[in-house]
Image 1: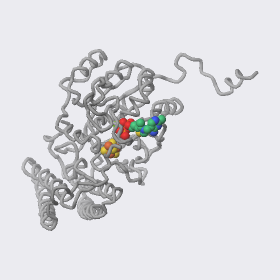
Image 2: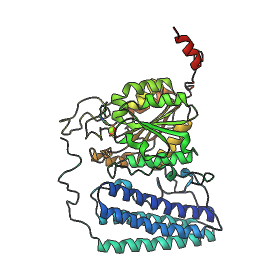
Image 3: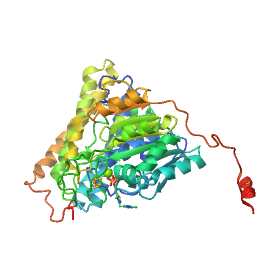
Image 4: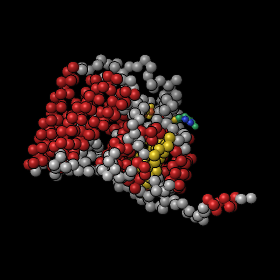
Length: 175
Length: 275
Ligand SMILES: Cc1ncc(C[n+]2csc(CCOP(=O)(O)OP(=O)(O)O)c2C)c(N)n1
Ligand code: SF4
Ligand SMILES: [Mg+2]
């Protein structure tokens, strides 16, 4: 709808700016979800979202360090070349539920990491500048590692049985 | 905060944790609004967000700028008063369909008519979310619930057409989940002179879980925005309710203090009231 998929990243600084924004936005998003879970007394999930945010924080710091000499651009939200309505590595807010389980959160994270992988993969396959291509390959590699990490966590957190959302005192009870 | 660095969306978020239900569309609206304020390069002290009562009307608390969580249905009089007193400020009025079109319906008509330079955002979920799911003026006539068995059978209120007929200068429809599109619409609305109205379709996942499907119904308008209110109204009356974007851009001159009246100081008025 308001997507902008065909805009090619045209400089190293622009690539790093996008890579950094992906991580910064993901940190904000995981904390936002952590806050939601805290407010709704789902502390196990709150902790999981904080852990995911912590993981992104490390990644963001690494990118910032790499961008030291090249510099980051100040882009307006409409100037980012995201393939969709917002950055790729963002857990979908509309998939959150107050009784969600670690499996649900990790599914959200898996989709987000996969989208980030695809974002860099698209750059690798379309960009003509060899330097940008080389850096995009590195970012793609890192996202592939994240996908594997989340998949490993999912092995330890299987899908909950049907009825996970059942609530004896649901908020939508109309008295 | 580094004052010389451009502000980011996160600089407009307060430290309060929203109490909205996880999955609520209003989280997206909060994100879009903070992004728009950053894009507009406003400073927090140059902006005021005014609301009424409802889940959606809690939004000023979650923002780092001036805010006023007012009385149910009275956000537009508050916003109007503020803009007239402080024309230098960016005034954004926000709330829900119940707040804006039921109890605040009359203020909505006259705010459009006055054409004060402010932006009015309504997070429309076609329900009273905060008070546990009563039908609102935009609820479909056949929406069946424990509080409206068999549906209300009433014709829904058409806020965009009513805004046009009443004189709003900018009319748009947005979908909360389309963050990039909503951010742009809010920026455009703020930049457009006069009264700008955006109806943001924002799902209430708790009382209207079926609204999660809106995501797949949304599409761009088939034609460009018009500056002819009659044409815009005809289009909106016959569309499917899911095309998002700018629908009307007018050029009516915004209301200015002193329009048609002699400007008087407080001392002049005191003099007149002396017996
Ligand atoms: C004068 C007055 N009348 C009624 C109420 C009860 N009340 C609180 S919120 C609300 C409706 C909210 O619906 P909407 O504006 O659509 O907001 P939502 O919760 O759906 O975001 C009502 C009727 C009130 N607070 N004050
Ligand atoms: S009741 Fe509905 S409108 Fe209110 S916070 Fe929950 S989902 Fe949002
Ligand atoms: Mg409502």
